[in-house]
Image (cartoon, rainbow, N blue to C red; front, side, top):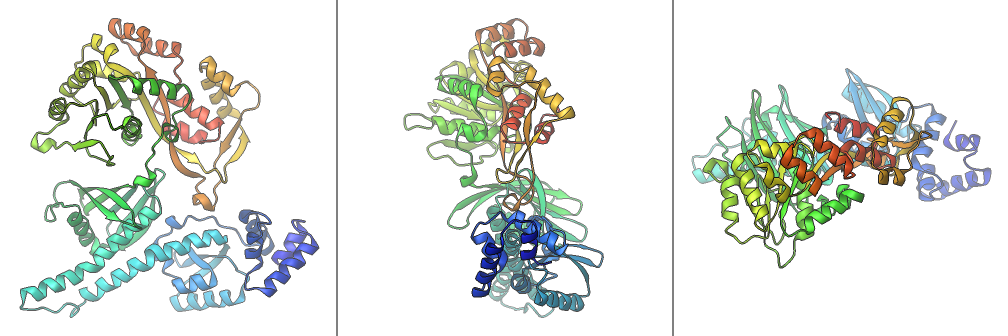
Length: 577
């Protein structure tokens, strides 16, 4: 049964519309599918599901990023582009090929020819047009360019490919030529990461090849495999542009560099790490266009936003951000800096390392190896007539005492500290040697946070919470302050939540981007009295409830109810509580 017959059978279109589609296809170079999508008769996912049923071929939703380039190379780009088919998986000698038009006889003949020529068996599945376009971009943006660069390198590594010369100058020219393909390969990897909105790039040696992975929305995806022979050259190239020691492979090194990609300056923070198979390189992609700039974009709303704005508006005091590594603490402090960065304010930061450069802010990177620590830096900062100070992390007694002193002497101090929640920051400061009676006067607010993936707004699906999920939501909501209960009208009846589905817009993951879940503890007189008298976490928790604080998990549940994230994400990120 063809597509038109199936559309008529399911009564998706009438006979008049069917005849019109056929005529339009005959009068133009477009296919029925392209015409339906152009006229927006119904969504692409629905169209190809119907086509799947008509042809009795499974519809596959595959993320292009998850398919290694070595698999894509089994079907040349020109064939893939012309016949709209891509290889997506290979198990032993069986290759799965996803096709937009599996009913096309010419495409079938071409696939049969490639299978005979390259010696593989195949099975066919269906892929949407937009899904195919994602694969085509990967062919164009990464595979072809890297392959070309490696072919150039391979020619120069072959015997006779590089001529020996008695002249030192000629030898240097030959060396530069051999470096060119490696430079191009690195440039293509960086460009592909930026275009794919990756937050990190991992280049790691394996026993037989070098693997390149990109982190997207907190999850690593394999994107490319390179010959293991070129791995040292790739690492060396990255070290050169990062101004690291090329000949030092025994110890980790840190550096950074900036490149212009599509008329945009992108910073990369580099870390090398020695392993038994060679050096691993991880690069953090610091794209200023992707940097969050408002509290609302961070996910701070309602009462939390009111508390934070009050804390920031005070001319002095301390705002602490707490949470594990990678929870977005520094990003939150950068947004606070953005909100107070004005012409008449002197802002100085001490960071390790400096992530994003902020215009109008004096940012300094500490160097512990030469004695320039947070503590020594903070002493000198206080002589620079600052209004606002950001200290990357409070990790020792000296830094803690200096930060408290600065907060008590007319400065707004921002810093991070490693604890599981906001309540734990007060005992932690006391453990670091700060006298309890100083904390109520020096601390304005304490922020604790985690990052969760945001549901894709194009494909998320509303469902009724049942069973243990419903019980969990009700349990957390019962502990909410009255204002939150009223806003969300929680009851024992039906509770609607959202779940991920997956579509071409989000790479079939069901998620797009990340957002924070927060708890913010405000320093009040009642809380200050507890800190001075008996700062146990139990008493601090009671007072936090009295002031109407909601926990990170509760904030996450509220974001589940409004469709921002899923219950699975909230439970994953708060499971340690």
